[in-house]
Length: 159
Image (cartoon, rainbow, N blue to C red; front, top):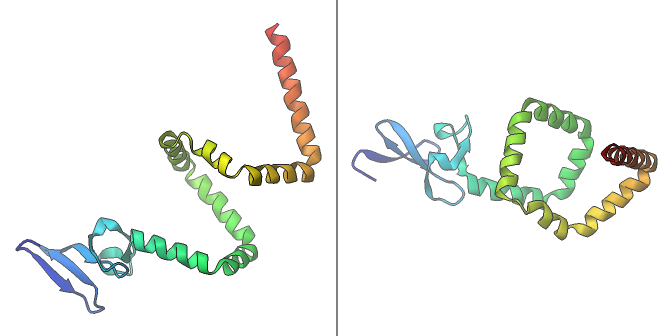
Protein backbone atom coordinates (compact mmCIF):
# COMPACT_ATOMS: atom_id res chain seq x y z
CA UNK A 1 0.00 0.00 0.00
CA UNK A 2 1.22 3.45 -0.84
CA UNK A 3 0.65 6.54 1.32
CA UNK A 4 -2.61 7.53 -0.36
CA UNK A 5 -4.18 4.06 -0.10
CA UNK A 6 -6.17 3.28 3.04
CA UNK A 7 -7.25 -0.11 4.38
CA UNK A 8 -10.88 0.09 5.56
CA UNK A 9 -13.66 -2.18 6.74
CA UNK A 10 -17.37 -1.70 6.05
CA UNK A 11 -20.11 -2.33 8.64
CA UNK A 12 -20.46 -5.96 7.50
CA UNK A 13 -16.74 -6.57 8.08
CA UNK A 14 -15.52 -6.70 4.49
CA UNK A 15 -12.01 -5.27 4.22
CA UNK A 16 -11.11 -3.13 1.23
CA UNK A 17 -8.45 -0.71 0.06
CA UNK A 18 -9.54 2.78 -0.88
CA UNK A 19 -7.55 5.27 -2.93
CA UNK A 20 -8.76 8.84 -3.45
CA UNK A 21 -12.27 7.85 -2.37
CA UNK A 22 -12.44 4.94 -4.84
CA UNK A 23 -12.31 1.25 -3.89
CA UNK A 24 -9.46 -0.43 -5.78
CA UNK A 25 -9.33 -3.86 -4.11
CA UNK A 26 -11.10 -5.96 -1.50
CA UNK A 27 -10.61 -9.12 0.54
CA UNK A 28 -12.18 -12.35 -0.74
CA UNK A 29 -14.36 -14.02 1.89
CA UNK A 30 -13.39 -17.44 0.49
CA UNK A 31 -9.59 -17.46 0.32
CA UNK A 32 -9.16 -14.34 2.52
CA UNK A 33 -6.72 -12.79 0.01
CA UNK A 34 -6.75 -9.09 -0.90
CA UNK A 35 -7.42 -8.89 -4.67
CA UNK A 36 -8.11 -6.24 -7.29
CA UNK A 37 -11.76 -5.70 -8.23
CA UNK A 38 -11.19 -7.31 -11.64
CA UNK A 39 -10.93 -10.67 -9.81
CA UNK A 40 -14.57 -10.44 -8.66
CA UNK A 41 -17.85 -10.91 -10.55
CA UNK A 42 -20.45 -8.14 -10.72
CA UNK A 43 -23.00 -8.03 -7.90
CA UNK A 44 -25.13 -4.97 -7.15
CA UNK A 45 -25.79 -6.16 -3.59
CA UNK A 46 -22.15 -6.23 -2.51
CA UNK A 47 -19.44 -3.68 -1.79
CA UNK A 48 -18.17 -1.79 -4.88
CA UNK A 49 -20.73 -3.64 -7.03
CA UNK A 50 -18.59 -6.78 -6.91
CA UNK A 51 -19.21 -10.20 -5.34
CA UNK A 52 -17.66 -11.00 -1.94
CA UNK A 53 -15.95 -14.15 -3.27
CA UNK A 54 -13.34 -13.96 -6.02
CA UNK A 55 -14.02 -15.71 -9.33
CA UNK A 56 -11.85 -18.73 -8.43
CA UNK A 57 -13.49 -19.27 -5.02
CA UNK A 58 -16.99 -18.77 -6.43
CA UNK A 59 -16.30 -21.24 -9.23
CA UNK A 60 -15.04 -23.93 -6.84
CA UNK A 61 -17.98 -23.26 -4.47
CA UNK A 62 -20.51 -23.71 -7.29
CA UNK A 63 -18.83 -26.91 -8.54
CA UNK A 64 -18.85 -28.33 -5.01
CA UNK A 65 -22.49 -27.30 -4.50
CA UNK A 66 -23.64 -29.10 -7.67
CA UNK A 67 -21.46 -32.11 -6.85
CA UNK A 68 -23.00 -32.44 -3.36
CA UNK A 69 -26.63 -32.29 -4.57
CA UNK A 70 -26.86 -34.07 -7.93
CA UNK A 71 -30.33 -35.56 -7.29
CA UNK A 72 -31.84 -32.20 -6.41
CA UNK A 73 -30.53 -30.61 -9.60
CA UNK A 74 -31.70 -33.52 -11.79
CA UNK A 75 -35.19 -33.33 -10.26
CA UNK A 76 -35.27 -29.55 -10.64
CA UNK A 77 -34.28 -29.85 -14.29
CA UNK A 78 -36.97 -32.48 -14.94
CA UNK A 79 -39.62 -30.30 -13.23
CA UNK A 80 -38.69 -27.25 -15.30
CA UNK A 81 -37.52 -28.88 -18.52
CA UNK A 82 -39.76 -26.83 -20.85
CA UNK A 83 -38.90 -23.51 -19.18
CA UNK A 84 -35.18 -24.26 -19.22
CA UNK A 85 -35.27 -25.39 -22.86
CA UNK A 86 -37.21 -22.28 -23.90
CA UNK A 87 -34.84 -20.03 -21.94
CA UNK A 88 -31.77 -21.62 -23.54
CA UNK A 89 -33.33 -21.37 -27.00
CA UNK A 90 -34.23 -17.69 -26.62
CA UNK A 91 -30.83 -16.88 -25.08
CA UNK A 92 -29.10 -18.55 -28.02
CA UNK A 93 -31.22 -16.60 -30.52
CA UNK A 94 -30.42 -13.30 -28.77
CA UNK A 95 -26.67 -14.02 -28.59
CA UNK A 96 -26.19 -16.15 -31.70
CA UNK A 97 -23.33 -14.06 -33.14
CA UNK A 98 -21.38 -13.89 -29.86
CA UNK A 99 -21.83 -17.61 -29.21
CA UNK A 100 -20.56 -18.45 -32.70
CA UNK A 101 -17.56 -16.14 -32.25
CA UNK A 102 -16.71 -17.71 -28.88
CA UNK A 103 -17.04 -21.20 -30.31
CA UNK A 104 -14.82 -20.36 -33.28
CA UNK A 105 -12.25 -18.73 -30.99
CA UNK A 106 -12.23 -21.79 -28.70
CA UNK A 107 -11.75 -24.23 -31.58
CA UNK A 108 -8.94 -22.11 -33.03
CA UNK A 109 -7.16 -22.23 -29.66
CA UNK A 110 -7.93 -25.96 -29.14
CA UNK A 111 -7.84 -27.61 -32.59
CA UNK A 112 -7.53 -31.16 -31.21
CA UNK A 113 -10.31 -30.81 -28.61
CA UNK A 114 -13.00 -32.75 -30.54
CA UNK A 115 -10.59 -35.53 -31.46
CA UNK A 116 -9.43 -35.90 -27.86
CA UNK A 117 -13.01 -35.79 -26.53
CA UNK A 118 -14.09 -38.49 -29.00
CA UNK A 119 -11.18 -40.75 -28.02
CA UNK A 120 -11.95 -40.34 -24.30
CA UNK A 121 -15.72 -40.90 -24.71
CA UNK A 122 -15.87 -43.21 -27.72
CA UNK A 123 -17.94 -45.95 -26.07
CA UNK A 124 -20.52 -43.54 -24.69
CA UNK A 125 -20.81 -41.68 -28.01
CA UNK A 126 -21.26 -44.88 -30.01
CA UNK A 127 -23.88 -46.17 -27.54
CA UNK A 128 -25.82 -42.91 -27.81
CA UNK A 129 -25.58 -43.02 -31.62
CA UNK A 130 -26.80 -46.63 -31.72
CA UNK A 131 -29.71 -45.84 -29.38
CA UNK A 132 -30.69 -42.82 -31.51
CA UNK A 133 -30.58 -44.88 -34.72
CA UNK A 134 -32.80 -47.56 -33.14
CA UNK A 135 -35.33 -45.03 -31.85
CA UNK A 136 -35.37 -43.00 -35.10
CA UNK A 137 -34.96 -45.77 -37.65
CA UNK A 138 -37.16 -44.20 -40.37
CA UNK A 139 -35.59 -40.77 -40.01
CA UNK A 140 -32.06 -42.22 -40.22
CA UNK A 141 -32.91 -44.35 -43.27
CA UNK A 142 -34.48 -41.35 -45.01
CA UNK A 143 -31.39 -39.27 -44.29
CA UNK A 144 -29.06 -42.00 -45.59
CA UNK A 145 -31.15 -42.41 -48.77
CA UNK A 146 -31.04 -38.65 -49.37
CA UNK A 147 -27.27 -38.60 -48.82
CA UNK A 148 -26.76 -41.52 -51.25
CA UNK A 149 -28.98 -39.83 -53.87
CA UNK A 150 -27.01 -36.56 -53.63
CA UNK A 151 -23.68 -38.39 -53.92
CA UNK A 152 -24.93 -40.30 -57.01
CA UNK A 153 -25.98 -37.03 -58.62
CA UNK A 154 -22.61 -35.44 -57.82
CA UNK A 155 -20.81 -38.42 -59.35
CA UNK A 156 -22.95 -38.32 -62.48
CA UNK A 157 -22.54 -34.57 -62.88
CA UNK A 158 -18.78 -34.99 -62.56
CA UNK A 159 -18.69 -37.44 -65.47
